[in-house]
Image 1 (cartoon, rainbow, N blue to C red):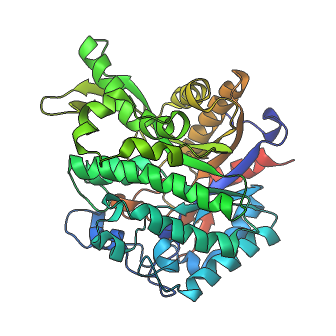
Image 2: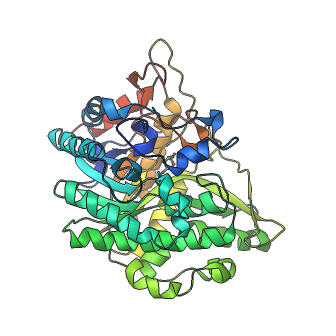
Length: 442
Ligand code: FCB
């Protein structure tokens, strides 16, 4: 088994962190948070395993101090967390839930007390239900609503935040949720998708503008990437993989850094985009100080009959995680190198999420997750390969600190470095947590 590279194998100042998100851990039933489109989605039969919600999740809302202790004790120097829009603005707009804002205030102070750099993501998928009623991401006004939420957070937390990104994984918010229907709001509609994806770009740029105006620094974006490979060497598979890659890997970064959408996506989107979309690139291309990469897996793409985009996924030969995701560490170095060359140039890159789901049983109070240690080791070596190739990679965040609410998988996809018993809510660091702490020792 490949060993975890020690901290000393990375350039001085390379940052290590752990990541979580609000709805997945906090317990949305507490503290006056408003209903979200995830609650609606989960209440609709067939969408989420066991119809589970984040109502209690890990109860981080009450146990945050213990959780921050775990981050600090592992030797991480940063904690990536998110703020729930519906916790702060239960109706999405208008009256602030003071208790919700106070919670994030305490949390950020708690990070600073422990010497952790707060890495904030403003939106990690819990759209207030009241805004979903108005069309959510399909409504162009969402950019302004999000800008207003951003300002509230910036004014309260901005003096203590180390880095900020507006939206986690816009591909998931757009394509996965409006085209594939697998996440909230569960639509399968190309017009909704094209509009949501454009409005996500506009909301991103609007939020960056608000954050700069409020005096925040170290602003970035967090997108997800997959190593998109043709299922065979046939020209048809090559073309399908290119189209998949344009939708998944190029759409958002190309909009943010080059001010355009890929031709391969416009082939399908052009008739569905809102009028005047080209004029929004001035906002969308607001300069960024860093770019975050969430990477988990590779996909093998083949052509499929039917309308655009005409792509299908095929199983690949590599070992898989408990969620069936193919483990392909070299895809990470490939993506990082490509982003650096084609889009981000000298802008520092961070791996903002990487990790694997496993069954992770507790046996006699221990969870020996050797597979996860191997996964993390292989991906950290892929980071080193990218650095050796000249990529300005500045840090790595493991997903996730805790086992948590894994969206449509309910509580079954365990990604944590720390095991959570969802009955007793007891936290137990896994072998991977201990191995990483050892590797991070100074
Ligand atoms: C990412 C999400 C995160 C988590 C991991 C496994 O797509 O950002 O919330 O679900 O996948």
